[in-house]
Image 1 (cartoon, each protein chain N blue to C red):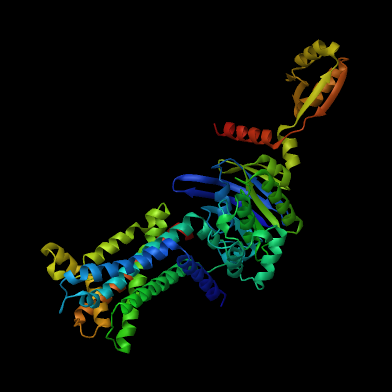
Image 2 (image 1 turned 90 degrees about the horizontal axis):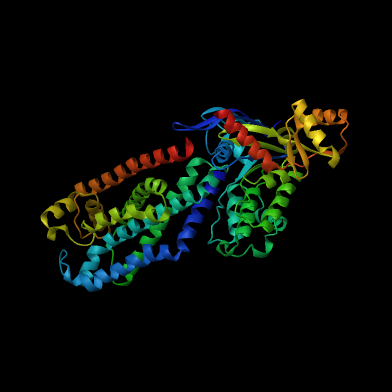
Length: 304
Length: 259
């Protein structure tokens, strides 16, 4: 069974369409990242998936259940870690955890709190009032609150926004550990390195539509793979003329000739046939940032 | 059982927030006590109430009004707490948990009425310490508690739409000034007979006057209150509960359940 299945989901706020037919599937036990700029529709989709909001049209299944008819069953299986931490500053960390644990009907509250505190390295400040916590400590405590009651599906809405680099890496490790423990993690983020480092699957949402999805490697390969080709200095003029004659577009860079994936192989063949000495030919490392820019540019272009 | 435990947990959280917040304690308990002492010992002797003058006579007259004033001041914090839970995202967190929907605002309502009754009891105790003696039967005492519950419930339900709609914590409690104004321009702190005619006409016909007069009669058997006044008080309170309850429900459903 899939953890999440979304089919044709739209969401309008009055006359404003925010989601315009979203389709996606999330496997159990994976980290799925929804990547998009501010206002792309990430939080609206997460609100629908976590039963906080209802779609205008389309269907959602969470672990095979329809949130509209089995809301409480869905809420028992999942938890939401929202963008803003929802902690009570006047209460201690332990009291904040205890509150959510009791609301979730946790049987042995102290044992579960202590276990989570150890896992998330919260023990030393658990009995301090939350108003004395740093931003990173608050974020970790908030994450711990989301893990109470052993939810199978965890929604993390931009969990590292505003978190310093050290705590960010610590949160990444915790998110990986959740996946390793068999949990399904649905993550939204604006940070491309975060998505690249953590995700099993990524979907790009732009203007309310999923414009690309797949594994990070496949997306990078498919969308913006570029190749760099270097020729012997004596052959540069011949190489340029050969590619020009063959109608192959290329861009000279400081490293050599940059070619798209589609044109790389014909270019190599043409150059070798022309007797050019090729000294280097390889696919470039592609980062998600360039993928993201490419995808949003394509989507914007398609909307024109 | 789980639902009951959740209601108890959330209600306990809010009451604890109120009892550990200096601002709330000062506004809802210390301020009414200060006003009570000020009115009784500074102004009381100069205010002509029914019967004999003097501070003690004024205390006998005005304490029921101060008790309702205390509850009205508490309603500002009801509104601010709900607003803070909304703007901080805590209500969203609760909505993402397996909790019956009515428990979420129900806990705020229960906590609000309970906290108002606690504050009212404390101010009543101060009144007793400075010489107030209630003249009650068991039934009139219970009816007074019942009237207080209805009053607390009515103003709590009135607070909810403001709390949900207000942009921020500070503006959420603004509506309570209207309640305080209604209490000041009523028979709560002084008889309406000496007021300027148009003000007196307003005071005699607005809801607070029959409610305060009924409370006064229930705490002091010597004060004659007509059945008409009592039914008018109950009518105003039940009407407020029904209308404000409906409005609160509609605003809540629109903001959280059908968004």
